[in-house]
Length: 422
Ligand code: CA
Image (cartoon, rainbow, N blue to C red; front, side, top):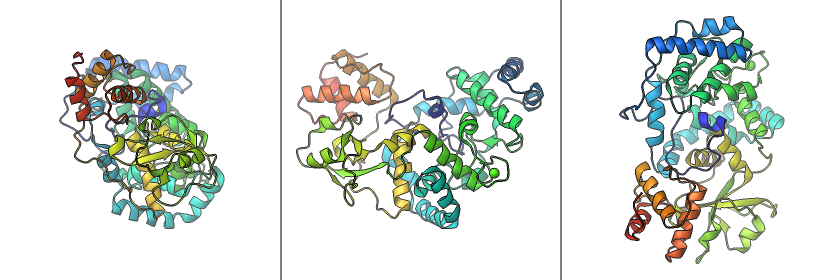
């Protein structure tokens, strides 16, 4: 689970790189931080403020004193936040790194091992077992990642972020206070309260605020233990999904094949049409048939434009995005759930020859689109639905396939079009 998912700061699909907040060390340790953790006197003063804030929000003073006294800044976590935005890899690399044959085989073994519990969780929350096990596999490699060296005490990590991350101090303060409430409630002690550098905890990597809202005790021992109890962790994830709008007996969507001469303007990723309409437009599921309920609705998404696979996305896909707003993440969970069911890999291949645009290049591309009269909603280097709409408008005006895909060829075209540099 990514911290921004819970803060709902980004309600858009992001096609740019995925920054993992799983239980591993940051992937790019070479990125230089632009900020440093607070100096020692500042940190002590900041901790004092956090204790007061926690007390104002209902945490007993003694709990905050015990948990925060004497802790030292964790120098590795602020650079980790800095590396997130820059860490870009193609969507297919992310999907394929997470949906390996080994990950599928282990997941299928876990489905067998936990079959009885998963049956009860399905009955209680209406979330399919393959989806739950897919979250488990992506978030912590079915718990194996929790044994790794990236796991650390949550409190120093969150305190360091709350006192040292200039971009999102409020988010980290909220998470820290939530972590203190977990201690106050008795679900965990400080020793057990361990997680990723961002405070994502347990088998399915709940942030503390998500824990308070969604964690459940499913094995009946009186504690919500997402760190050691697989039933608690999987049921908590099911509860999160149910409370986020998961529709029982519906899937996330599926890969589709597009007809020749398809009108790519229909792939705007937001307009939902009934399956019956998509069928009339010539789309075909890559495997099997359309769901029987022809009036269920879905939107069409082409993550890499006309050159890669196409997907019809049902409302449950947006629920997966509530866990982590990165499209590559959601597609990975969705695809792993299908593979656990025995489905094959994607039918169409990705445009593997494409070079990913850097943040700087994406920002340049956006500025040039805006300068040509195609509004992008702010040149921030993040290619979301607005930017893709602007790309489609530019492509249409220039007799290109209007698939909304931002690649190096498009940037070259924009630069050649004489659009002014930002
Ligand atoms: Ca329990």
